[in-house]
Image (cartoon, rainbow, N blue to C red):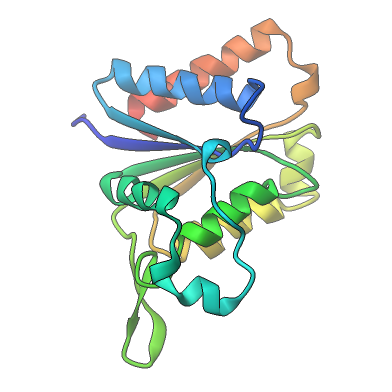
Length: 197
């Protein structure tokens, strides 16, 4: 396999304490680097940016915070993106949602074609994976709750801007994981990293 350009986006909002999401990200990065892939990493919690509060602010592409311009450059650079986050109240943490709203601006994530403001997807040619940790069993989230928030992210954000395919890794009952369970998850992430999947 040719070397791939992989961007890892850490969506856990805690920038102080290390969590399972960070452990999984590092394992993925190790696996990818061991296979010769090029890896860049972004920690959303370490970025300073305001939340968008109006449609006008979202459409004003000249107001993108300076801290997020390198992020857009990294997304353009990447061939494969992996987003890590914990499930909070059934969805991604608010900070990650605010980050995606800022980054996925008109003119970058999609472009107007004629009268259609969403006529051209701006990030085609990239694949993605979403890695989500949660307290409930992953099967319960997938089958009873229909994995609604992850499906929304995959369809309404990543797919909407042209990323395909988009895969997911759902990790449930994280509060019951022992050292062996964490090790197995790290091995899974290293394998995905080596395969750039």
